[in-house]
Length: 207
Image 1 (cartoon, helix red, strand yellow):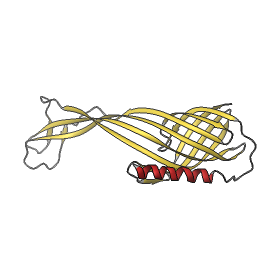
Image 2: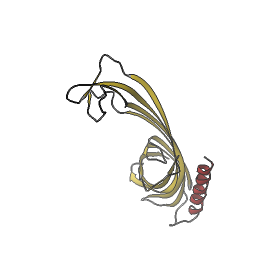
Image 3: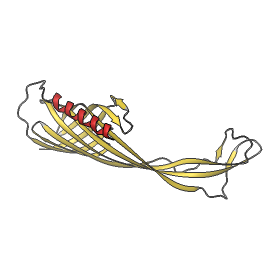
Image 4: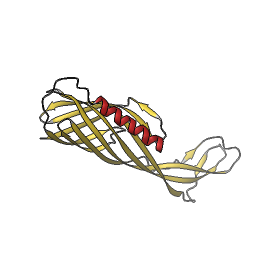
């Protein structure tokens, strides 16, 4: 965990250092507030709020979703030797909740949009329904779900963390709508790097 925090600190300092370089001449920026949706690893995925004050900004993203199937396989076929009865563990529905916080610094701004660097992190919590299911073998080698033996249901909790920094561009689509496209360098809770997985978002800005 200490290595993870140290890496995040270095990434943040690097982003702030890059932010001091202005690529284009810009006019003074006002304050902007935007609501929309954002999808990504560092940003998190879900409803998102953006706030810009002059060159600096913050982005908060919150979302949740339930995925997967409630159905259990009626029949399985595999090599389980001569066992007449087997017990398999199967995954069912999963519920994901994620939260992200990102710092944004503007490098250039014009009528087309805003070019910026960002740094931050997100947390993903996943609750998975697990089933221990019993199957009985018949003469043709298939295993059939034993309907007279109810499956045992339990839950597996998984936690994921993502930290990263990168470059982004906020395109001005007109009528206060903006499309954000970002390219982050991401590190997960296992200190593994996932480079260049794009992030994107759509916002409506209130001035």
